[in-house]
Image (cartoon, rainbow, N blue to C red; front, side):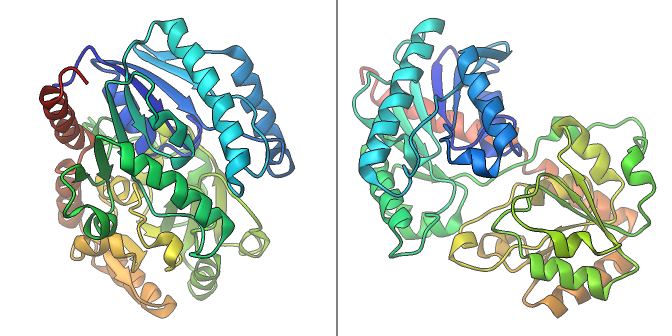
Length: 388
């Protein structure tokens, strides 16, 4: 059991953005340790895409360190220069800004010799000697750019430095582990999990949310961000060929969805508070993961998979490599027509017994069970190098 440690948690996403592995693990660490969560920095270029949220992000930076809950502190990285993901020189300057701010935040709350938990290569400068107890890299997915793209080259260069200097490397991706970690004793495969406290126990069925009550059954749900990974053409095809089904999108939208919005059976509910998500999922008929199959998604292991299962929902996904181990528990489709057929079939064959089986599977794959493994590995590393 890891306890009484200081942990600097360097995340590539915002705390209030779609809740993912970053936030779950930081919260669990804070039960017995002190955690400073440093959320990503934004440049003025983000004003063009997300004006309000960028301005709010900068206001949070001006507030300094905030307390989320006991032992869990949040620091928003300062504004940075544009094009840091494309040019190494700009990235180096940006990391100086972030590092300087994070050090001040650590000093303010009295952090000494923290464990560094890094989940984004754009924090690579932190792996250089900073007096940390351990350096841990959580390699969540592969690089965002193509092999020859400038962004991809910068990303891989930063990632290589982190890998070289890390004491422990975790990854939820079996593909990353097989390719890079099988012969490296620092690598550990730790898949995503589900926050059981949000889903269990429930004394009785929850009331249906008001904005879902008027949506006709069957309700096919997608929770999360409609971003570059989502196959919008597939969603549009499903909505067009299944006019009697309601497709419910719960989460933020990035980019153009005008075609989908014109579909009378597609409902965009927008972002919802994380604590309300189980109540929404409970009143859906199935959960879907309509991701594109590409290099970008080759190592993606969606957290939502386990959340759907925790709600008892049948799950249909495109054939993502990282989900193939779940064949038999979820349905993997190889084409739009196959996706449609599988969706129709799981709805027809669903039953209370099958829903209970899915929930049992989810219980066996909780974040708390993942954390036990992570803490054991960290404790062993500390014991092997007590003076590091």
